[in-house]
Length: 253
Image (cartoon, rainbow, N blue to C red; front, side):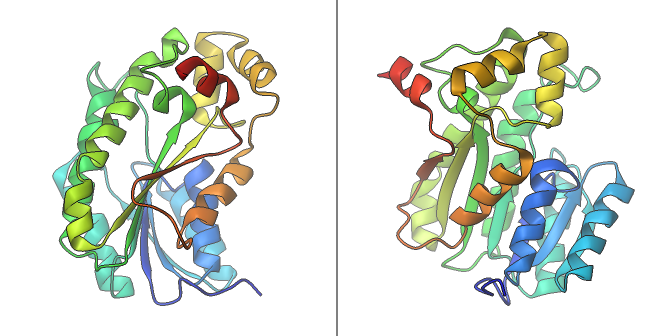
């Protein structure tokens, strides 16, 4: 039986109706947390995630919320408190910026501004001992030292801006006894971002796979995110480099 170390806890996982977020939600729920499954537009996918969690004996609820809008942040936070009694874990998984129909400033709006807004809303209710996990990529985390694919650069820079903005909040998080953790991974097999990148720059994922040696699957990366939740001994603002990042570290040295 999976350890129930998150029993009685409430969690919000953004962008969790599919892919990495959905897989992470299932793993967190297995450990006893009540999970708010967030989606922007695809209700059937989110409801399917919730059904899977409930059939496995867990607790979850699907909430439609666009985190780039102020009402979206409040809907997620309020639901966690109302349904599960508290908000103890916030996993910032949602990201984007390659969508052609969302405007040229959408990447920064989503990957920086919305992340900060959601955290500020969550801090109003999160108790001491809570954890915030920001999910990013090596391409974004190391963008100031290592160039990335042209098609991904706006997203990478906006993701790094979001990470930097959250790190600037560390003194405030320290005062509240809340821990920030950054989880960074390489390109992930099977994600929408990988698909869009390969479409914009054919062969991009194959080239990255060759350079890295191996790319994580959605399930493997979700397991790494879940493993960092409630982990003992983590320092404030710790960065977990999933799968290693040897070529990035060499470039940034």
